[in-house]
Amino acid sequence: MSKILLIGPKQNRYNKNDTGGITILFELLISELIQKKIDFSTIDTLKANYNNNIFMFPKIILALIKNIRKHEHISLHATMNSFLVLSPIIIILAKIFSKKTSLRKFAGSLDKVYNNSNFFKKFVIRTIIKHTDTVFFETKYLVNTFKKYNKNTFWFPNVRDANIQIKKVRKFKKRFVYIGSINEEKGIDELCEVIRKLDKSYTCDLYGPIKYTNEKYSIEYFKKIGVNYKGPLNSNDVLKVMDRYDVLVLPSHREGYPGIIIEAFALGIPVIATKLQGIMEMCTDNKNALLVDVKKTQQLLEAIKSIDNTKYDHLHKEAVKTFSNFNSNIQTDLFLEHINHKGKK
Image (cartoon, rainbow, N blue to C red; front, side):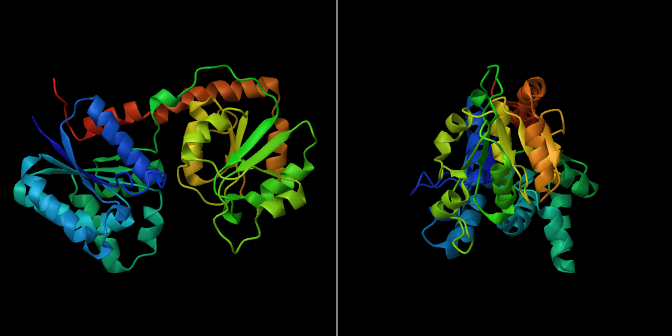
């Protein structure tokens, strides 16, 4: 029976509360493979789990060399750094030992990195994609961009555990929520301006960490302008808190595939968001979401005010249906199918 060697970022051993999105995705894949009785081993690439960052990649490479003979398939789940550093080594070793390879590139910015790179870096990126057996990207536009270098290039989106989906009918009570980092790039200024124009029949609360001290945002700032800022959320509380609201508002200036949108769909909560490339792959205007142009405050206000009970019922039902695209169980099955791997009988 063939065995997979998974290389990716595991949970922080020293601080389990410090868990990034890519670690959540990698750990979720591991959990799904265990449930499906797939034979696999792992090599950790999370920097925080290594005492000395200088020796992190050498240790990973030594672990790869030590374990490659025991596995038939080598699967790298990569940030930009691990993509550039580890992929060439994996490809070379896989050729030497006649192993199959796959690459899952997290985030949706590789096209921008590629376009802004010099000739040599572009060559490296193309070579990695061409010589990896199966490639996965988080966004469809990256699949379309890089498929010309490798026909075995597929979509593996941001996903969530199917068990989080809540099967219930929602009623519209004009309760809106923003959950995310509190900074200008997330459209907080536009959202605050809109909130101040809404009458008292509306609720619109903000949750999230204030990350940048050089920006104007603070608890005092939100009190002064009359906006309900509720503070940061523990990751374990996000679903419970969001379930109290009717609509997620995400007026970002820049995004990839926001996991918070997937979690909203799991709860049957529709979204008001900006027309960004990744978001438009997840959301369909007037179906599971209302989409507005970036930095267009009036459009955002009109979108919020346009929702009534009839419109909300339609948006809610479509949001529930959309979650299947981001169901981790379904996407893990597709991952195994694409790499031609079968679990234990």
